[in-house]
Image (cartoon, rainbow, N blue to C red; front, side, top):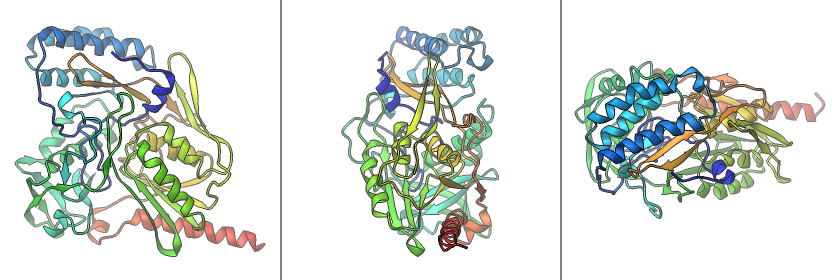
Length: 451
């Protein structure tokens, strides 16, 4: 298994792991687990046994908590090791390993099979979408975004519609797969969401059948052709796989700045930096981290340095042998206007670290919904079968000592999405973010005038 220097550990830290990570063609389009071109080749039983032992021992020896949160890992080995004899394919092995890792009840433990690993140098995403985003709302897969002019838009799909079935697979069947998981309810909802999106996505040019309920709860059906995604792939960093990236920046009403990016990938850093610089005259900037599951950990404090006005920290990463601060050193040209960060139940990892740290420093107001609570720094290592093993190597706490893992980040102003407002075509979370910018700007103006 490949070893990493401390620098590499930092660069590879903080990627949310939640099972299948193929995403739809809007806010949550991010994957390292997308359909790759590599052919699936099963290894020998001996290699599979060796792989099992490597995964088990790595957790035992390198987990940040020597007590594994009270899990008897030796007993776990006794239960799972005999099951290797019944495994006949690598795919079955990966399922077994994921079940074993699930005993920890933590994020950032995952197995990514070789055929799902994107090759380095790929510029276009090898999968496509139909132009929707969705969330699980009250147990239903509700469409939350429809990209204008997309296949979904042309087929008549709208926000607030409920997806009941994708091709021949009902959403209830996807939900049942995660019913007995040891993870939190928030991560379970996220995994169901990603499971649905993974089915919606596929090779560009192929079709997918969506069975849904419209605004009047009438059962309907749409056939949509999957289209190429508009973003680009990031480059590989060590064993950190290439990821699909997209970026958006614009001015809203009142010249308020708006920035959204779907992952913390190095190829987006210059765009983020330039966008913030270009918005220096804006009364406020909204950073939309909804649906952003994280990525390169050090980007959180790098971006914060463009927005913070004083030296601070986003939190502390603790390993078995020490700790490290996510220090923020403000740039001289840092933006000094109002900052609002939007989060939701799909905001994870590096996104949570940045949001929580800037919230505790008093620099940003958080608007939206409680984040997923998956903020364990992690690394990737290659297994003998060719799969990637992602595992957490540290814990993380905010500057005030709050544990994000399993708890999430609570917004200052909670705004829940409901099907009713989505059917109206509204984004109440963005509306509130704009309102908060106006309030802070107005208060600053009154203070400057001596009122």
